[in-house]
Amino acid sequence: MTEEQSIRMEQVCYTVGGRTILTDFDLLLEQGVNRTILGVSGSGKTTILKLILGLIHPQSGRIYINGMEITNRPESEYREQRKKIAIVFQGGALFDSMTVGENVGYRLFEEGRLSQAEIEEIVREKLRFVGVEPALDLYPAELSGGMKKRVAIARALAADPEYIFFDEPTTGLDPIGVYNIVSLMNRLQEAGKTTLMVTHDLPTAFATSQRFSLIHESRLAFEGTEVELRACLQPNVQEFLQPTDRSLFV
Amino acid sequence: MTRQPRQWKRCSSVIRLSAIDQQMLGFFARFQAFFFLAWQSFIRIFSKPYYYRDFAIQFDKLGFSSLFICVLTGLFTGMVMALQALIQLKPFAATSYVGGMVAVTMIKELGPVLAALMVAGRVGSAITAELGTMVVTEQVDAMRVEGTDIIQRLVTPRLKAMLVALPLLTIVTDAISMLGGYLIASGYGISPIMYLSTFTQFMVPLDYLEGVTKPLVFAFLITMIACQTGLNTGGGAEGVGAAAKRAVVLSSVLVLMCDFFIAKIFVVFR
Ligand SMILES: Nc1ncnc2c1ncn2[C@@H]1O[C@H](COP(=O)(O)OP(=O)(O)O)[C@@H](O)[C@H]1O
Ligand SMILES: [Mg+2]
Image (cartoon, rainbow over all chains, first blue to last red; front, side):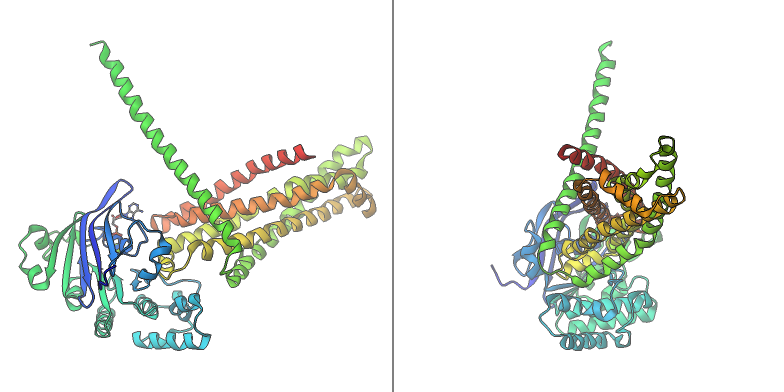
């Protein structure tokens, strides 16, 4: 096994319910090079993240996490590899039945290696990092949308991952909320985490990533840097950057 | 020219057949998934981690919440059983047998079935809705990413809670219905001793066993259907409502069907 520090998708095809979501999709996420996958709603962005996490399985193609192929292996075999990745789901996906503190400390409680006091210390530290420490004993239902996302980020951090995935982290937030999330992502990147975001929000993408993939009609339509993306003359790329048909973004 | 219509017919029947095939395949796939989940949750009853806290929460939620409706159901069913039995027995001057008749119908049949139907409606739908919500809000995915075994964490505690709670609820329903039956019988001048003494004439030990075997099987059925339906919910909040309805209907029908087959098995061993 090579000690490769990256996540790779090669020629991945995924079909569900008779619908093709991805066709021959390639992706490379190198450590330290943050990436955004762009695409309109329903184009399969969340599906890509779930494929990498092994929550769903592709019909063909290969997916590697740090050099280890996870495709067609049972979940128990790649659980260790997957611990290097954390994800912030679109709605936060906080556990309703647990307090914010229990949510953030979930994995630590499950693993049961640390004492109650040690876990609480870590939980407080992560919540302080995202700026919602006072919410420790609240339930998710009592939080605003922006706070939920920040708690979800804190939960992702508690696992001390190498990679953090963000599923549309700024969708549905007000400008201050968006600013908070972007600056949080930048701080995480400075702390050595690699981020992979999926979104259709271009300003956020440019503020947080060095490389970009655009998915269009189940295929990879573009891969490159911001300069290359802006210079790209392909009609489907231009359509995404300067939509004439606004209904795409509803 | 005369052959063409026949060819058309054959063609369309082939298409229809393949549609049925697909439905059958889908049905068998779901059937297989159900048994896989049932088996996996069952073997996890005996393996760590036990999640005692989740068990306690679920036992409280599923068991105690149904206590009151089971008491009401038992009371009125026992009363009406006694009333009807007494009307039938009076011409034969056999009203003293009313206790045994109420006991035999309640303990073997109505107690387990009615308690199970109440619980299927109340608890089955709640389990499906809760798990369905967790699926559509990606909480289940989040748990899997955190390395949790979903069956161990979400299904097995509920299964254990129900396997303990439903037999207990059935026993409560049975006991209350006996009491209800006696309330009516006492109006016909039947003494408590007379009421109780006929139990042994009507019941053999195997009947009591039947009375607790049924709730165990029903508890397993209701929980597994509710969990399987909940974990396979799709289509947002609307999907959750539809899934809950489906789980209740399916588990209620299966409870009644299984009741017949268990009764049949006990008849063989009698
Ligand atoms: N289980 C499923 N069954 C049928 N269609 C699905 C399923 N999961 C996702 N899809 C479809 O796949 C497409 C891509 O979904 P998704 O990856 O969530 O899109 P995005 O995150 O880009 O908005 C959507 O059009 C959705 O309807
Ligand atoms: Mg999405």
